[in-house]
Structure formats: C-alpha cells, structure tokens
Image (tube, rainbow over all chains, first blue to last red):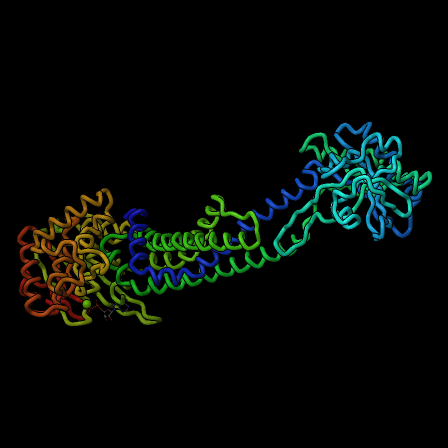
Length: 408
Length: 223
Ligand SMILES: Nc1ncnc2c1ncn2[C@@H]1O[C@H](COP(=O)(O)OP(=O)(O)O)[C@@H](O)[C@H]1O
Ligand SMILES: [Mg+2]
C-alpha cells in the first residue's frame, strides 16, 4: 500500500467523522490560529516601525548625543570641550560618508506672544536639519543658510505651537514671538506631523509639533556668549545603506577631536515606538497560547490515535496476516495523522486569518497573512501531528500478528 | 516435495516464569491440492499450529518448509512477504475491514504485494466475487451482507493473491448451519479448482468435508 493510498484512506476516515475530527483537532486549530495571528501582527508591527523610521528621516539617519558624564570626571573627560558647533562644521567638511550634518542646541525656553506664555523646547540648528528629518513648511519657509550666516532673529514654528500662540497656524507668519524675552520673527510654520502605532496610542510625532527652530548661530549669539556647545548632531549618511560606515567614521573623527568617547551614536527611530513593549507582551501572550494549544493538541491527538490503534488491533492483525509489513502499518497510522493534521492546520489558518483581519481592522494595523505565514502554519501543525503520531504508529507497527489476531 | 513439510515443531509460550508448551513436536505434511482438516479439542494447539504453518509466528524449535522455502529462520518483513505470496487466511470472525467495500476488501492483499494498479486490483477482486456468486454485492460494505456472504468475501480475499494454500480457522464457527453449509460448499468448489486447503476445526461434521484429518491433542499428533 503506497503512502498516497494511505493518505486517501485517512482523508475518507476524516470526512466520515468530520465533527469528531474537528473536535479532536481543537487544540491544533487554536494553536495554529494563534501562531498565524501572532506572525501576521508581528509582520504588521515591523512594517509600521519601518514606516515610522521612514517618517522621521529614513534608515540613513544617525544621531550623535552627548553621553551622560560619570560622577568623577577623568582628566581626559575634563579636557574635552564636549560636542560643539565646530564638531559639526568639521564633519560637514571632512566626513566623506555623510551627505548632511545638522547640529542641535536644544534648551527649554519661555514662549511669549500677545497674552500667550508657556515653556517649550527650542532647537537651534541649520538648514540641513530639515533635509535630514524630512521636515516641510506648511506656510513660509525653513531656516536658510543666509539666516545662519547673518545670525538672523527668525523663527520657524511647529504646527502645534503656532496654533497655541496665534489660534491658527497660518496667522503666525510674520508675527513676533519672544523666546526668553528676545524677539524673533516667524518666517515659517511646519506641517503637522502625525504617526499612530495603535488606535489607542497618541501621536508618536507630537514632540515635533511642539517646538520652534532658530538659526544656531543666532542662538549662540543671543544666549550663550562665546560658548558653542551643542546637545546633539543629526547626520544623513551619503547612501541609504551607509549608516554603518557613517557611524564608524563619525565615531573615530569625534574621538580624535575629543580625546575621549563622551558621545553616543544611534540610528534614528530606534526605540521610538513606545508601544513596542505592549506589542511584545501581546505577541508573547499569543505565542504562549499558541504553543500551549499546540502541545495540548498534540497530546490529544496522540491519545486519540493510541485509543484508535488499540480499538483496531484486530484490523492491524488481519492486515499483517494479509501481508502488511510493520513499515506499512506504521505508514498507515502516520498517513491518518498527516491528513487530520493538515486539515487542522488549514482550519487553524482560516481561523487565524479571520482573527488577524479583525485585529487589523480594530487596531488599524497593516497586518496580513502572507504565503510564508501560511506555509509556517501548515508546517507547524503537520509537525505537531507527526510527532504526536510517531508513538501510536510505532505501537501499531510493533504488534505481534498472532497476539493482535487472538486478542483483538 | 510436499507443499507443507513441518518436522518436530514445538512452540513454548512464556507466561511470566512459567513455560506453557502449546506444541510439543508436531510433524505435518500436506501435498499440493490436498484438503486437510486439523481437529482437536479446545486448547489442544490447533490455532498455534495454524499460525506457524501460516507464517504468522515462528516455531520455538523444529523445521518448516513451505513450497520449498525454509521458513523456520525467517522473521518480520520476510515472513510478511511469504504470508502475502503463499498463504490465504480465512478467519472464524471474517475479519473484513468494515469501512471498505467488499471489492476493496478482497483487493487488499494485492495492495500489500505492490505492482498492481488500483484498477487492476479491483478488476481481479470483482472477477473473484463474481466467481463466488457475490457479483450483485460488489460496491457494498460488509455490514450490508449476511454472515455467510461475508465469509465468502473472506474466501475471495484469501484467493485473490493466488496463494499456495488457504489456511482456514473454524470457518463456520460464527455461522448458522445453513450459512455454514453454504461456506463449506464454496470451499469444496475452491478445492475442486485445484487449491490446497488446511482447515482448523473442532467440528467433526466440518472435518468430514476434508480428504483427511490430522488430530491434535495436548500439543501432539494423536493417531
Ligand atoms: N500467547 C499465548 N500465551 C500463552 N499461552 C498461549 C498463548 N497462545 C496460546 N496459548 C496456550 O497454548 C495452548 C494452545 O492454544 P491454541 O493453539 O489456541 O489451541 P486451540 O486453537 O486448539 O484451542 C493453550 O493452552 C493456550 O492457552
Ligand atoms: Mg483456536
């Protein structure tokens, strides 16, 4: 008897007892459905994170931050000027792996316009910042090279602050805003930036709407005297895949200039998703439920198969008398479990797809069951079935024909 | 040379620490085309002897040649092959597969032999069923047939692989006398067509069907 024929017999068996088969496969179905759902949702989340990274400037964006200083400073740490505007200029002129360099000076200041008055972040930077971070003005313009050279007292407002200060963003253009008492003219208001990881979570890019940008040279001149320390550097690698090379070059250049590694270099968008933890937990729960269901399903299948083997001892004895070898009996039982495992896998795949669809709609996530996921699902349930079927099949194959006929 | 040539066959079953001798030195010879009954009281060792002659089990000691081949040393897979090619079994309880049609049942030995298409197997099975007067039952399942008809399906199954002999264990034990007579008539026809039959029975009337009887008592040939 060929394995294919055994498969057909198994299929006929499963069809004859459809309700019973489905019931015995419940664990396998639920397990497969959970695995399908978790994989599809995970795929959706990964896609979303990629979208977010693209939104905040793309994969080629790198950020350099001042490193937290230790309690007791070493001599080299004390000798370092930390990150300065000059570092930015140096990198712009010398780092071959970079296409754009923007320094950032980022204190919290007092915003005043008319009767509005609140504290908020101010970024002192250069025109490259808009290129690197994919920032577009809604009205007016961004900071220009001329602004930087002339130390112009101009200001570009984030959408939310423009709204808070002037009631409506377009109205801000040309108005005066005081930052810690010094007056600036609004030359641009930025587009509103929105990105939601989940329906219930807030706007992950809201911080970008709640700030204003001024030329970094103006910032130093008005607020810092002769000091040119900056809080961060944002860099754009020359090629989209060049972030790694850029990180290495910038790291060694800054180390040579500082004499100490008092900075941290990270790719942009990393760890930006505050909901990632929640999703991880969510995925984990689904995965645990899936694995437990699969194990339970496997145990149930093994038990049912053993019972079915015991019930059919005389059948196996008869088949052996007719010339079936142990291998053929083994294949017969295994084919039976292969059939029901594939059926269970398909049912689980259907249920998982329905679950994924529901979650995707409810959470507005781009989750989808792909061919790869479907393959993994069927392969998983098939493996569970085969593992569960090995022992019962072995038991059937090892029956002594005489005993099977005599006591069956 | 005889079809069945068994010498000094013993079979000892081990029950815990106790040895139970079921056969103690049995010689059996059956010629090609013979119809032989093995008789004896219950527990005398008839079924044990039949299992050994049918290559379902190996003797503890003794020599057994079937159709010229030395069987005593064979185990597992090799025995399965011999069973499939040389032996056709008929059991007291019919032992048909309840979820297969009777033609599928009859075709089963050919499936294990290999080398036949499903079409070919079913064609042969149906031809045999026709020959045994069960043509109008083709496509039915065993539970749709009477006991006598089921046993005749089992006879068809035992014949489909054209074995060297039929081994039959109490074929009428589960049948009323009318159905039993019907089955015995079938065996007579099968024998007349040239087949060798070895039939185990404790029923003297059934044994009278055969050309000769081998009587067993307490694991030995008795006269
Ligand atoms: N598997 C076994 N284990 C132990 N004893 C057995 C086994 N099979 C048969 N016997 C014993 O061997 C003897 C012969 O049994 P059996 O061949 O079935 O006799 P019969 O078919 O003539 O009734 C009996 O005493 C029986 O109890
Ligand atoms: Mg018996």
